[in-house]
Length: 151
Image 1 (spheres, rainbow, N blue to C red):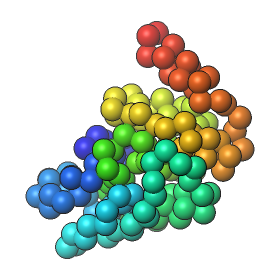
Image 2 (spheres, rainbow, N blue to C red; image 1 turned 120 degrees about the vertical axis):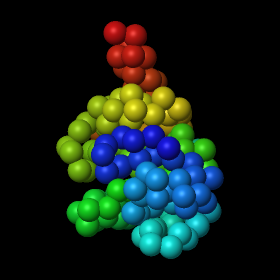
Image 3 (cartoon, rainbow, N blue to C red; image 1 turned 90 degrees about the horizontal axis):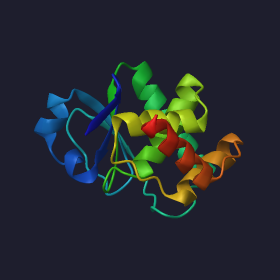
Image 4 (cartoon, rainbow, N blue to C red; image 1 turned 180 degrees about the horizontal axis):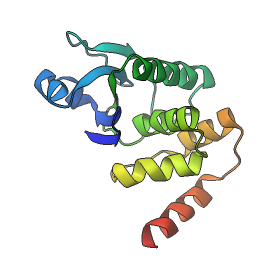
C-alpha cells in the first residue's frame, strides 16, 4: 500500500483482505476494482473493471465521485485493484485531476513518484485522455515520465 496523499492510498486486492493492515493505515473507505471484499467499519464501492480495456467514462466518474465524497467525509481512501499497478493508478490519476486540477501527466507523475510499481495500461491512459479531453499519446507520456525521473 502506497500513500499518494495523506488521505489517498493505492493498493492491491490482497491488502483489502487484511483488516489489521487497513486499520493500521487508517483506511476508512475503499474503492475496489477487482473482487469486492467487505470490511466492518470501512465504506466501500466495488466497480468491476478489467485491466487492458478502455474504461467507460461513467465508471471513472463514479469512482472519482466516491473517492472525493469519502475525502469530504474525512475518510482515508484506499483504491485497490488486483496488483495495484494499473486500474487503481488510473482511478487515482483521475481523482488527482478532478480534485486538484492537475493535468493528467502531472497526476501520473505524482502517482509514480509515490508508487513506483505504476504500470498503467495504454488503454486506460487513453480512457483518461478521452474523458478529460487531453491529447497526450501514451508513448509521449512515458517519454515525459522517463525524462522527469532521470532529471
